[in-house]
Amino acid sequence: MTRVKICGITRAEDAQAVAASGADAIGFVFYAKSPRHVNAEQAARLVAALPPFVTTVGLFVDADAAFVHEVLAAVPLDVLQFHGDESPEYCAQFGRPYLKAIRVKAGVDLLQCAARYSAAQALLLDAHVEGIPGGTGTAFDWTLIPGQLPLPVILSGGLDAENVAEGIRQVRPYAVDVSSGVEAAKGIKDAAKIAAFMQEVNKTNV
Image (cartoon, rainbow, N blue to C red; front, side):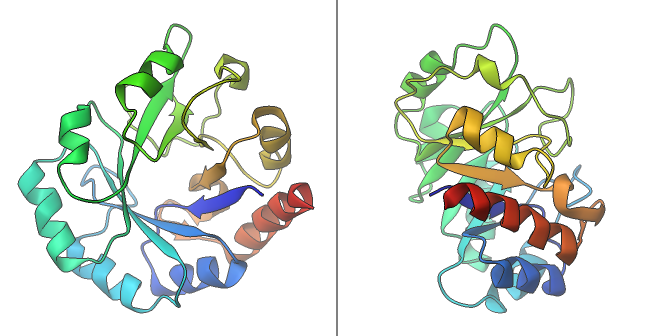
């Protein structure tokens, strides 16, 4: 049963479309350089409008610890997602489960990453695009993922309704993570694309 996280939500109608689609988790980007960036006040409003049983995830990139604490004081996030060069000690200090994003390219030792971030709930595997920490809409070579990673894998990077079923079949991830693949424009989700994406995932879950 592959879970789904839809990331980069900026509008209430998109948050509601994600929840209505049956996605398991919804992601908010607290990174000022991202076109999908939200502040704590916006995110708090979006979370307040969600129905029960949707996991809320906050994405940070090499943020000051004080900023993460500030966001946590304002927004009831269930899980933190770290997309930069954060150390395991940094990631573990907030008293929340966390996901560690790894930008995959040839030469990145994912077994070593899993050992280093052994306290993470999962490794989120994304495409390595120089200078951009995530949300690139680019897929990576899935054959670079070893079969026996000791942590759950969340497959990310360039997924959409066209390729997600193949990604699930090939990688057998715990979950898939999509952002640009269900958008009409950066930060604006498309309800029809969300529905099509979920339909493809659900087909592979049968």
